[in-house]
Length: 83
Image (cartoon, rainbow, N blue to C red; front, side, top):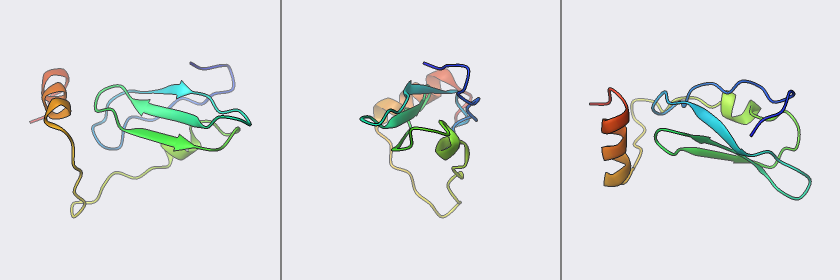
C-alpha cells in the first residue's frame, strides 16, 4: 500500500528482510510498517513523513535480546540464510 509520496522503506533492522506499509496513517489511524520476513512492526501516529520512523530505527546492539516465537524462528530459517 503506497502512493507517489511514500518513501522507499529500508530493510528490517532485525533480519534485513523487505518491509511494506500495512496501513498509511490518517487523522484517525496510525501508520503501520511491517517486515515481510520476521514480522517486526513499527506503528507511528504520524500522518505525514510515512516511513521515516521505520527508516531511522537502529539495529539492536549486541547486548540487546530479542524474543521471538519458535514459529517465527522456523519461518526465518526457511526464508533466509538465517543460522
